[in-house]
Length: 400
Ligand SMILES: Nc1ncnc2c1ncn2[C@@H]1O[C@H](COP(=O)(O)OP(=O)(O)OP(=O)(O)O)[C@@H](O)[C@H]1O
Image 1 (tube, rainbow, N blue to C red):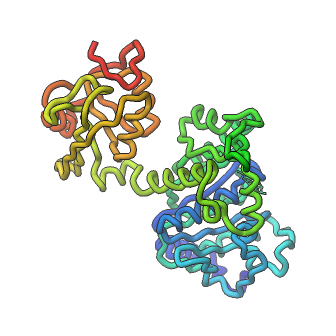
Image 2 (image 1 turned 90 degrees about the horizontal axis):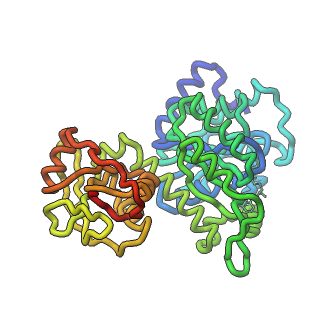
Image 3 (image 1 turned 180 degrees about the vertical axis):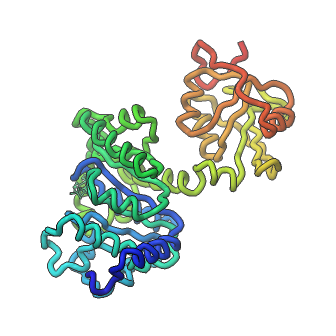
């Protein structure tokens, strides 16, 4: 491999920056240990992004078990030049070290520096062109190889940490979270894979192991849970047949869970960061009945006024009808409308927690005219004056 690439460290560094400069968003998929479904997730995320219309590159940087080609149905494929990745469709290209091995099941017995050299060469020399996403399947664990990849990639949009539901996964996830923090990589969230079993006959989900390890890890480490993907016999079949599950199935519990992970990643990477929110404008919602004043009975308001603000300018105002009152529904509803902030009179702690889960800031204590409150908020003078009601109202606001 090395005879075709750049050998000089400095030249290679320049090349890596140049190649990575054409990639809009880089995400790495990692896990504290092997066998938890990291490559399955990398493949499905890359396919899901491509299906969503993004130009995607998938880099199999797991040198010990480069099994992504198998999952994509291109096992045994040989590439002679590092320049061009393998094109799977208009939107998806892939590179794996196994494309350059004599036999795909040759064990990789290189020592550390050689492996690191190979990874750097892949990162610098493969010409992905202008793409929206590079999804990198990292080697498992938190040792030298994942560290080299993470550091060499430069600024990444974040890591997706894959884990399993068992209690021990909290420890593994903690290591991956620390690793991401150490290399200054934002964490997009945790995916709990093999979470319960989905019956292939009735599509019902059954918890066969102790469940919720990934969920608890996310809570404990204050990172987002991107989703819980059930154990599905068809997932193994899809991987073995080289047709990623998200592409070949398109329905059922596991498909919806995978699809929602992809949507959350797009949302976080393209619209969820503070910078992105600010450049696209932020969306501020007010519960209201008449469109003019803030309705303190938030849970029973008839509509929402939603303002889009860019810098100090109000660029849009919409009035939308509120859905029926049900616990947790309004936060989800406003989350789907891409609200970043809700300004209202009062709210129960449970509702505040629902909003937090949607990454929506809650400002309490507002009364009177909506636009007056909005101007105060934009001027930095409106902050949460109220505290959560001590008694539970669900979504219902109260001013007592
Ligand atoms: N949700 C799931 N349901 C059923 N089987 C799954 C699921 N996720 C992954 N698998 C299966 O588990 C096995 C291991 O998955 P995979 O190779 O993706 O793990 P990995 O973490 O990348 O492993 P390694 O560290 O060895 O590279 C594969 O056979 C895969 O099909």
